[in-house]
Image (cartoon, rainbow, N blue to C red):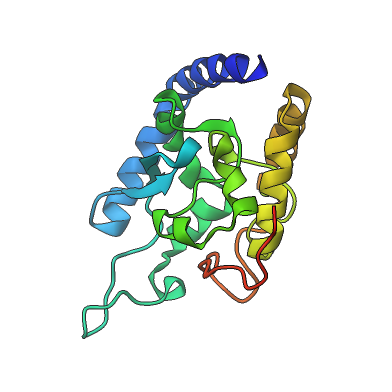
Length: 205
């Protein structure tokens, strides 16, 4: 029952959000275009509900700078000053309202991860795909990228089995607080989150 209400709320809120934030959306797009000298949007394949693949839309915060061998430089060397500010304030997430409007994402849910991670999940971790991925989620308000991957999956699966209106409201309020204090943006010692390479000790369930 709540899932149907949540889908309706997501659509209406995303539509209103895009209208209200249209001026901000336009300004950031223009500024990023001149800062990066390329498209300000970042599109990447991510995994949604029931393992359906979709293209997530975010603001680009890193340049596509490569070394002399044609390999992309580390994130910390490609992340621009403006990109750092945009990530710190979570403004890079604004374009995902388009994904919510299209029904690919929700405002609250496990964050959509890379398609290449699919073969690495155990059965327990795969449960995170039983619901729509979200712009924010239980993991994001409990450490975000400062958590280990195992901790993230524990939070994600817990949310799947405890999803409710009041929990979503709690997560949204806590997200606003997290944005203001800029907590857990990246893993310790890294500009962005580290890649998931699989869990050594698999869950049995």
